[in-house]
Image 1 (tube, rainbow, N blue to C red):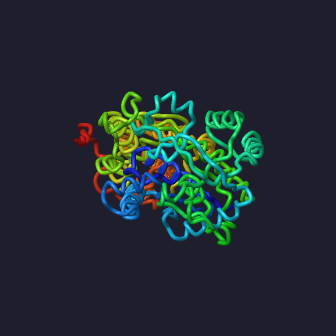
Image 2: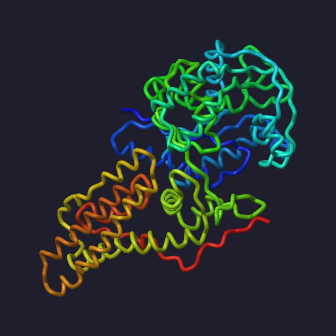
Image 3: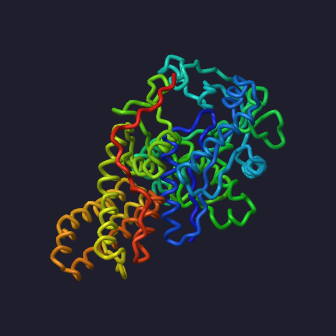
Length: 486
């Protein structure tokens, strides 16, 4: 069965942050896991590059919007490479192919599109409209960008989302469009129950010129959020390409909780308007906060640069930390001290120590020869079940039960004493079982920490020890001190 997975596409108004690093890694785990099951996979990520905010940022730097988008998009692409992300596609909404196909999507939706007057409050920083109640609640100032909301009255095109509200609601309720975790499903159910409204999907070109032109009306450009959502099918070559025919609907789309409404209400409406099936699953992750649950901000100086983590600890350590110690179904905290402690206690002391001890004893007591290695045969049912519902933290807990169990087995069996006593056959059985356990652990870790998994398998799987250069996870004496931006 073909398997299509996507991340959201982040807006290129700022540098990549640790939260999107989390999203990339989560989607990568699912893609690698699916490939491990023998499924043909397309895994897509990319960047969202149109809209007034990008034009505004570019003007501040005295460069073109495309030059600005090129620079920031490359940083997102570079982050994916640094995190060892196995994406097959990287789509940019400024790609000519996307822009052309976005216009085809618009034309296919014209039966549900009409022109009308829009009056509302708008924030360029969010590229979004806000209700009167929200504006009053915030005293007229957008809390995300510390700028006044703008009162806008203009002629726009609208999409008849109300046409599809009952179908979307039914699909969510009956599980044919699955939203996990359940808290996010309930959140969007309440939004839909209160009633979806038709949505504005364009802006006048004299207000925002940096965007995809509306077909047959050069006075309007597509609203950035509406056009960006189309990337999930344009990347497959909607409407005629074989990839689109074979891989849509998406098996799973991975997004952050702040864009739930766009992906669980508006995006399904677009798909239904096109006569297309909805994605099978929408997985919604939480946020990474600073130490003590404090929201990250440049003002507080607690923003985490994922590249800084990778440079100091490596991609696999970043992947392990965010997948195990950030709750899969909620928000979690990051601190350099906690990362340091996790690195030393779990990766260096527990996993690294088990690998080093086992390899060293096989070299010392058996001249590096392991012989035929049977399967360890542990029950992986809970691990598999956790993977199916995107409980990455739970799946890694199951793996670490095996890691700790192996260390306990080594301490109980005491291979060094078996060697002293000359119990050769028993010693061989013990060491072979240790190697089998580590190979199984490596296989379970493969979607999570691919480089570490490969190193462990390289040591043991051919029946002859091939030592790792240096130590798998060398201990670190002091936590990393992040560079403070002035």
